[in-house]
Amino acid sequence: MFYQVPTQRDRRFIVTGSNSGTGRETARRLALAGAEVILAVRSPEKGEAARAEILRDAPGAAIQVRRLDLADLSSVRAFAAGIIEDKKPLHALVNNAGVMAPPKRYETVDGFELQFGTNFLGPFALTNLLLPRLLEQPHAIVATMLSGTANFGKLDFTDLNWTRRRFSPVRAYAASKLADLLFARHLAAVAGERRWDLKSTLAHPGFTRTNLQTAGKNLGRSTDAQLKPIRNSGIGPSGISLWTVLPSQGVEVGSEPLLYAATAPEAEQGAYYGPRWWAMVGRTHRASIPRSGRSMELAARLWSEAERLTGTSLP
Image 1 (cartoon, rainbow, N blue to C red):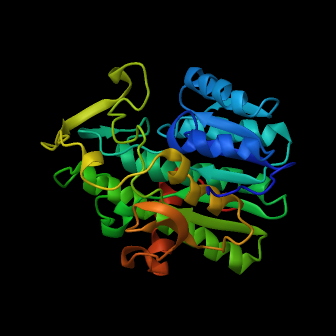
Image 2: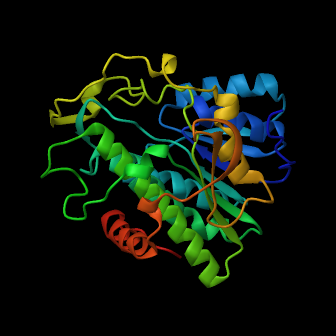
């Protein structure tokens, strides 16, 4: 039996990266539960296609498509400004979008290493910019999608953008997801200290079959020219299909930890949810915080650095 999302009627969600994979499934299940959903996507064309698919399952659902490129802080600011200007309630932000292990080192529009910028700095800035609207509503939620790779992620504060070290796509991805973990935990701590009626929760999808592993360097853009290759890492796809080696699952189950983190009344402040079996597949359960993400001092240090890099801060 799949996780049954409780009614979300009269609640408004933003789901980033919701044109495919776990993001689209999350948006679909939210819509089926009665939520108003904003599909925050890089490609409005793909977003409209996702909207049409969701509406086939949830006729009459309130679904909007808005452009958001997390690899461009000006796009993040424009998106957030549009939400603020709406003067409509916002109850939940689901930070789902990400990019995984491009074959070379690329930079965002603002000059950050692509994965660090897209997976962490973009969502960090978006969350800070939307917190004033979120905090107007009772029981607000910020749910952030992580990855099991955060378990072995490491942050080098002297080289967060991988300009001095030999670039490793997988290590850079793991570092960006560790940054997400620390960000979500610090937000939970701040909410507790300030007695905000807001929960910051964390989730990971286990080994779920999506296009994240195959999206490549263009991240859904029409041409590679929109990204700037910096230098070859010497590390590329192995060509081995891990789907045939390791247990995996579809997005219907893989999205459930994120859905639980975003909608379950039982989801706890700062808690981390993922698949039960080998942290790869199965029903959602509460996962343990990896050793790499337990230091709240490290989380506070990263938060301060991210504020400096993005020019955003807590309300």
